[in-house]
Amino acid sequence: MDLKNKVILTGVKPTGTLHIGNYFGAIKPAIELGHQVHAVGGTHVMFVADYHAVNFMKDAAMLAQMTREIAAAYLALGLNPEQSLFYRQSDVPELFEFTVLLNNFTPKGFMNKAHGYKAAVDKNIAKGEPQDAGINMGLYTYPILMAADILAYDTDMVPVGKDQVQHVEIAADIAGAINACYGKQVLKIPQYLTQQHTEVLPGTDGRKMSKSYGNVIPLFGTDAELKKAVMGIKTDCQDINVPKNPDEILLFEIVRGVLPTEQVNEIEEGLRQGGMGYGTIKKMLLAGLIEQLTPLRDRYDYYMTHYEEVEAFLDVGATKARSLVRPVLNRFKDTVLGRI
Image 1 (cartoon, rainbow, N blue to C red):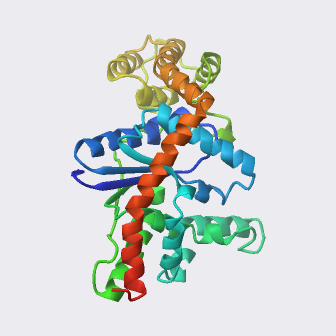
Image 2: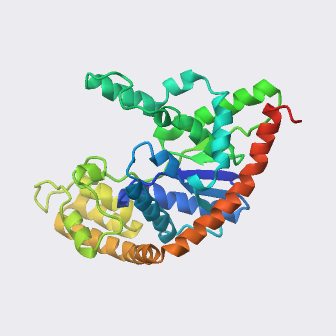
């Protein structure tokens, strides 16, 4: 993967309490990618998508709190604001002017096929309600704002999970249509980047780790909270001495995504040969989590109690972001409005 001199962009919605699935599955790989991009002369853009969050969060105080938490979390988890462009989406008004222009080139059919809109329609139909019940234009045009987030920086690549690939494809299609309309490259065509080796951690009950299921291991939890979650991981009743297939054991799935390779190999061998109990493995997992997460939790607590430092980082990031977006926006406006 050639990252030299590339612009790599990632947005994160403020979604409430983080868990280790968020960290090991998405946040840690994104931050590590940022370090890699910076090391080869590229630009790493990381923003808090608070305007996107308004679609599902209408409680202003709660949204503000979740925005503070996610910004503090990324800094605590290793994002370097001197290497990565880190800002709040709402602090870059040029993005919304960009969105208005994109609206004029986006076929309605693109929005009809967007996964988020289709999922909301299907949910309404399943409940016997009108298909557009409760669906606002923010949700319907969500992919256009996301396209603005991407295209405004002449972004080369957008790291995404499989469920987000469509959004990058829509952004690329819109940019392609605009370029074709004017017979030149007005906007850069972005590509999506899927990280193949990212670990997806299940919850303590085997389902997707989610706060709504009550099956999470909290990222910034106290030692006592971590212990309660780890000891609650669902296990079977097989005898300790019976050889087991680690790939069929929920506890091992979590261990494999969290502990160092040496410990993972030790646990895997113990399960295959028999003789290693689930209680022992849970204690190893708990010790490993406490060792890894305690310094992260301490940094997070620091940033939350010194939030003026976080605000300063975000303000500087927004200023830099606006300076990068303006030339692209002006190029777009000049082309569309016939100024050149």
